[in-house]
Length: 355
Image (spheres, rainbow, N blue to C red):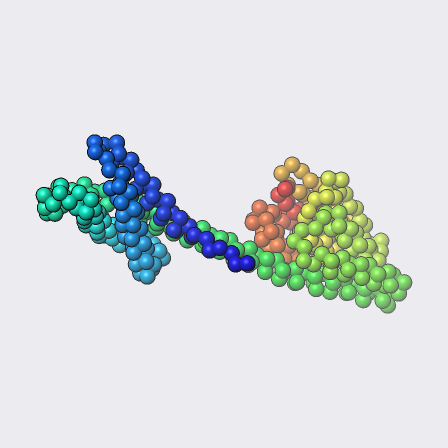
């Protein structure tokens, strides 16, 4: 069954607008005319609507053909100003001609005694002013609608393109990070294969769990903090097999953090950085401490490790990646800072706006 064609918004506005205007004129004539003629009122009502729609629709077709709707404000004003004057003149001619002919048709004895020239001279100014007012309102409303529609459409397109670009950047960053993470893990296992085969097998089990976790959450923009912390614990266990007593681990997380959503691999990236630039470079190793807490306005994730800040000449891929992901994910409202603490400690902190 075919759907019935619906009237467009343009035609609805045309019919409703000119109908209301014509009804108002008919009501005004009813209130001010002593010998009111309903027959004349009906004919005037129909013809007034027809003249209004004829002129404005002709203008619309011309404006679309000339692409005036695509112009900026200043060049558009220079075009619509004379167009309104022309429309008002045409309206004046058509309305005065309509008024004279209709009255000549309905009241020939009265109208024939008044020459058209005199009828025109006594009415043209009033009708011209009315036409100028009506055409100005219509033309301005028409172009304001299209201007607003164009701006809204442009804003939507720009927002859509920004979202697409942001998603593409995030996907690209995630694609860079996972190989980087697993490459480091494989290097860890390489050390264990010859030195401690049983631990190497355990390391392979841990890596397989990490890989499985990564595959399941690869497309997620945010993950539960408890899942991220579980990933970090597996990673640190994997590193513990390699460093043994040189690595001590301390993880402290608020209970409120468990159901909090954070960017994937954000804690793991800080921990990996702590291992690479802290534990690995120190003969006696040290403690990697992870703290995660949820506050009123933000989430704070802090990782501390032994070391000196001057040992880190340039941020590695993981930290650059993390900073860029945080910037994209939270529109610049999240931060990642690294500073040196007394006692040869490095502190890396992520601050994320709390939802």
